[in-house]
Length: 209
Image (cartoon, rainbow, N blue to C red; front, side, top):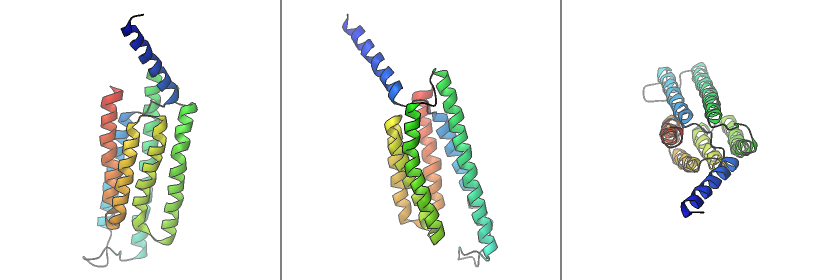
């Protein structure tokens, strides 16, 4: 057997092993769209905050409890819609990619990936609920970014290695956001919006074309 044939066979075996041990049906386009959804959501929340009456022009304290509740309601609904839209888009586009490649989207590897993501996400979600209960609103966005980054870092063992770098960036951004709690919306837009668009674009150009 010629040396070239040996290399081709080894490459084929390596590719087959990667397909069996890693979930490679993640869609880069879904990452781009998730980032776009997050940026649109950030604009909606920003407009809601700017449109709410405040005690005076130099204060961010709302005139009444009803105004605060209205803004919180807008933030909550927007976050839920962005989350559902992002998940739905990711599942649909990843399913199409898997079907195109003749792969199954739901298997042992995808289950392991989901479990490794859910543990940090659920932990972060419980912590955020505690922050809400205690009124520590300034730490909600940092917690979101940090635990989302930890989830990505953990799940990267079962998918593309680039996901690990995105996780590190999210964690780093979350730590920086904790130092500037008054700019939570900006860091949220950067982490879930801009970084997703950049990451999704890179993944699309590298794996989806």
